[in-house]
Length: 504
Image (cartoon, rainbow, N blue to C red; front, side, top):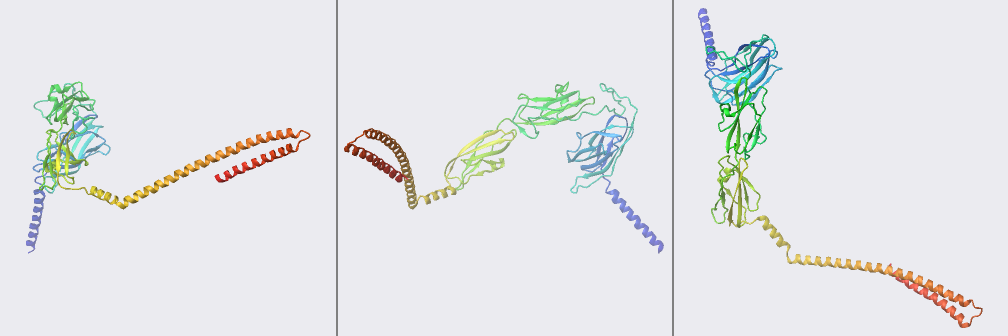
């Protein structure tokens, strides 16, 4: 029994081990690999070389890869990371590197499955000192195309490069030696030119339509570039260096778009650089030009279901080049309304319009900003009344009643009376002031007259009284004259004072 028990135990352990190996290797029978090519090499100090990161699906449909690499920053330095020939069509994380930390990271994917061995990145290194420059994957995630985004990978390669101080023979850049037909080895003459970066102050965005047919494209020429190929083509994959007439030597830094060169529609400005390594990367910059307005269009008026309903407007402008972007519709004196092409085709129901004839104006604008205008006259018989206008009319009728009109005229009469009394009071004040001035002048004149008269009478009296003997009549005359003068002066002064008192 003990022997049988031991045998059963061994069988159970063997079965478990077999099942574990089956699930381990059975599920990994199809797995993807990452590699670095070349994985080895010998270089001298100061030399540059390119290492390519590749993915090998090995029977698995791959759609994305996320990886981190580490290299020896004391021996190697990253010059550039090129993704021009990458199988990835989008990048969740753009390739980045740090020469101080010795790291490279990237995260990209493809909309279509990757089923064959494909290049992901091309990394150019420069050797710094003697030693061993190693490159290794530190983190790797390869995802399969399925609903679960399963991570599948079996192994990753490492790379090691020997850097020595001895200078290996460097072939002439002007005439590189021919490769041996029986050998698979190639000689690296340096980095290929990078893809040109094209800029334009006129055509800023390659995804935008423009109605301008003239403009300027510029780019920066690296120091090692010896020629440039520039061509305007309808092919998004155009290779300008294939056309000898497109090659410019010495290289130019700009390309002028004129009316004779530019065409309506989508074109591509193809530019490529040449250096000692030859031609390689091509930039095909998209250029969208539409200088033609949309075609003339008709606004269709569809009557309502009944005689008192509003009509529906439909319109559909055609623009063969860029297409209509939106419509601006103005009904009568209302504010303009913006409509999309789909809304215009489905129809716009007019509403809240008083009976009568109204003009509807529609302006169609295409993607480049060109416009085309159309208008139509619409007859409305829906019996609609503007509630705000009706309310205003009712308010006016409520104001202009017989009682309100009587009160209004009474107020006006009172105001006129007040104005009249104020005016008369003002005139009276002016007359009083004038009378005061005249009274003052009379007083002053009377004082002057009586003063002169008094002096004259006193002189006559003195002459008369100088005589030694006066008759009785002469004495009575002198006394009467003096008394009359005093009485007259007193009376006149009293009257003047009375006038002053009245005017106070």
